[in-house]
Image (cartoon, rainbow, N blue to C red; front, side):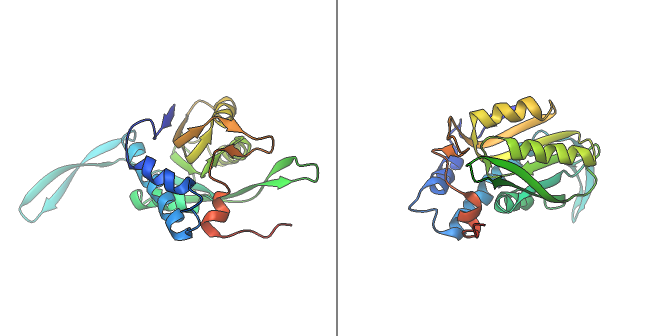
Length: 217
């Protein structure tokens, strides 16, 4: 399942316009907050797909029958760029357990790159709903490798992938290689990918914009 949150008129479009804008995105706090907002909207939409159960709650005047989540999802994110998006999800799924993965492009002198995954910390995800966040779905290679490593820990019931900007090529790659129990929730979808694997028009480097330029080695 693929959901483009920009297909309908909502504040997501407003926030994404600021996330993309060179005039506004230099304000790191505003950039991070807008990423959180996209995560919050995605969390609300995903919550509609989850399982619920009835619960009796004692109020000062009687008993209320409420519908509550049957199980909490596991929130997973790719360090460091995914932290702001992850925080937005956490604002809504505030009882969830968390997984953190370090996956990044390791560039070679010829301009090509390989995906390096050096760290993963995760609770049990066996039979759980996992919500994996990363701001950009470009080639899809790092996300597929991350999902493969998560599935090596346990077999989740379903994976919801939340991204701010996705590229059609990356979406197709993930859908081909990451299994059928996957839903992709994108703030918006762009069609072009450069030879170096950057989304156009995209927004630039989400990690640098949120947390500062990293040292190039």
